[in-house]
Picture 1 (tube, rainbow, N blue to C red):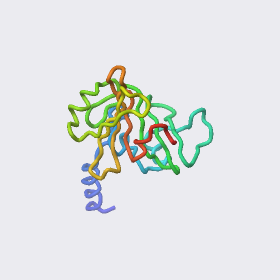
Picture 2 (cartoon, rainbow, N blue to C red):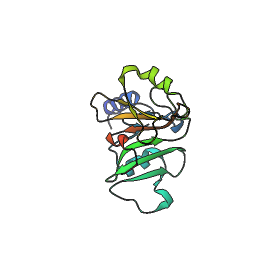
Picture 3 (cartoon, rainbow, N blue to C red):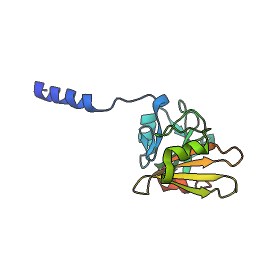
Picture 4 (tube, rainbow, N blue to C red):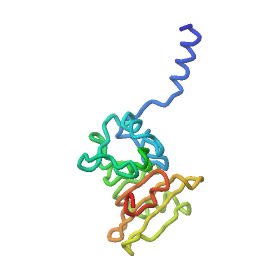
Length: 171
């Protein structure tokens, strides 16, 4: 390579974001860290640095299924449709959203960070619980906070496509 090409590559490399560790990954309306809604399972595995597997390692249902990382990402699962990631689901504390909200935080903290941008809906099965939706401007990507009625705390966080609105997984 010529010195000009090498210096151009070095300049571009310097402008690219440096990969962060999984401990620094955040849930966003587009996914989890570098794993994005619409990405193939193979691409997600490459970014996660581990294999994704179904419950009890049964064969993947290509229409819709859930996958869990084999290692390194406790409390994280992915809904997959047609072999593409549709959204991420977080069920353990420690992983924050881009707004700094984690499982275990209060509903009040979610309302404070989002204000009027939240679409709050009553839980389908628990009259004292709610779904808090924060949609991107296109309305096709968002974050859902499941807030339990008993303690008013976030019990789950979902980030990605319209499948975050589903209440019963793939149903």
